[in-house]
Length: 266
Image (cartoon, rainbow, N blue to C red; front, side, top):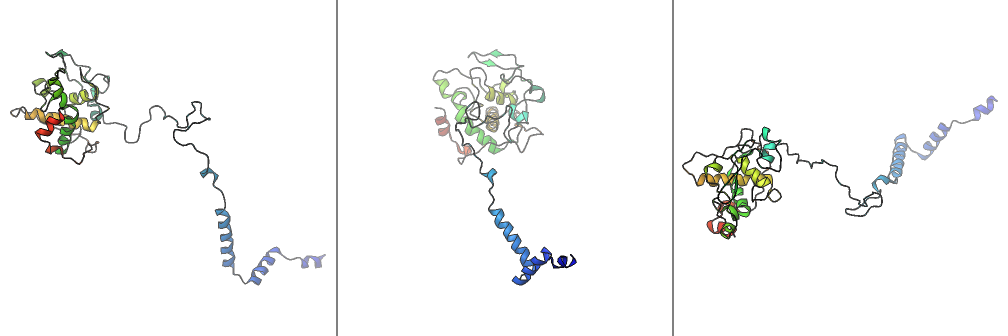
């Protein structure tokens, strides 16, 4: 029995004998095993990367509505569009932010002029200073946008004598009276955003940064028509230098001449 045990060979010794006969070192064996493992790993399938998927606007038999594209959950806000700066996006002070969004100035006591325009005289809850830095670039951008959207009614200098008014449309109030000279900048922003009287909302056509640019240009027009006054265009101390800025095009609006202004009034 003892003799038979002595004849048994350790499996480990057989492997060592084979390695020795092949003339391989221990590091050669380790590299061989590593290479073998890598070959098997490369051959594995990554099925989670190859799973079926839908293309945009395709039909789906899985979802009840039959659409592959899913609607975003209610209240989803795109990154960078949270609009936490209420003064910039609403033109209202802290006390005026809870006012109804459908009314540009719910606290106003309206009056009317000879053209039937509703005249707002109470500007409670609206910001009185620009929530972004007022620069020459901002005013130039405002001039360009004003000549696109506003001049047809309000005229080149804001007197309410635009080209369609000359053709019979109701005359809007002039910017150049004491009522609107003393109005806070938030009033003009709110009117552009929500509309007022016969003027519809321009929120879908004019982004917030461009609305403030137009308001800055309206203030510049008011100052130009009242050079002896004491009007100023002030930014709030808390004006956000990182607020969205209007997108400028290659043309320089500051070079707009009278011919261009008249052309824009058609």
